[in-house]
Length: 196
Image (cartoon, rainbow, N blue to C red):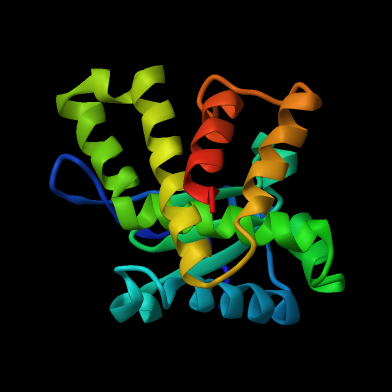
């Protein structure tokens, strides 16, 4: 999967027209065929158990230096376009049995959850017509929904759901919490969804 050229990409905006919008600066995009193939294969595996399985071929995955840019592991840009942090993907590719590989799969499932739920398109619409939808409470709700969907995919694939609980427990112990990614609420939800 090739990274976007300088022309950017056309995305649907809330005002009902196509606009040029390069979500990640071009200089942060990374091309690495082997890692892209690995990540795309994992993305297809996850997509196979989602309501978007029939449009999985429309999804695009791009490697970018997201940690350097914004401290992100992944980002959904709408229209099936997903960015993942190159360094995380590289570590996962180097050792598919590592905690980095598990975290990478969790990030990918979470971003697919945003896409399936239509969060990006709804946020663009809300930015113009319902700004309160994009407040902190609304953003937290969307993050929790993306997690809920991702954990559902995880379970559908018969993967160890407990990794979500362990990840969020570790995040809380390390003091990693955010306004838009409320770790305590994410942990509570993961515990409820992953209970036997």
